[in-house]
Length: 290
Image (cartoon, rainbow, N blue to C red):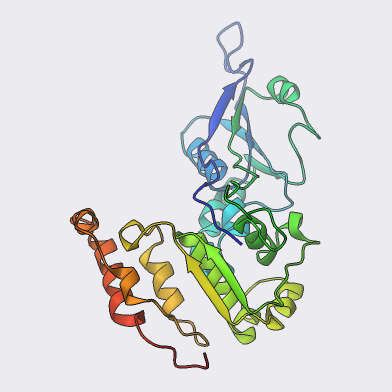
């Protein structure tokens, strides 16, 4: 199983169609009709900007999935409810401006409606969908059975509709997670949580059952570079340290810094604190059975 440095494209791109907001006589025709393709953070922030702009608009938000919020719903780990709560902010236009903003789920642009049709029906189109495919870890063995992109596993435990029929082999003792970012720590944390902790989250019941019967006892977090290049945040690191049923073991020699890495830490207090946390708290021997 591997993480990826590739992040979905969160930028919003616009395409202006044939605009008729002003009639030939100079009179306003009415609100501009805007289509937003993608109901993730980028799309919904664009919607917020539009409805708060002061200009009259009518907005339809198209989404391939049945529910909005994109990575907030299907990418943030289910035990991280604080971050998931941003969905209340993202969803505000649907309630506060319900006469102006519509959500159209289960609509795939290119299949159910074409780009040509969007340009014909709307004055402008904003494309704000992310990358659907994971970056392949191009190393020997990355395509062998038992090797998965983090996106696949995250979609499974997050209840993504595309992963509704997926199952993952959790019958082995050891799992390697490749990466040094937040997603890698999310995957490691979900795998290490007890059945009781998982059951208290919003993961699907079948995932709770699978994780509860998991035979995994050893999780190895493999990072290409050293502690000076860590990409996860202090919050993710702290949550990993709060696991109730796991020992977090780091070989102290792995935390040694070269002269160039020490220079890299200068002026980066957040990263310095994380390195200090790893050294002081986790460079120890396991308390449980080996």
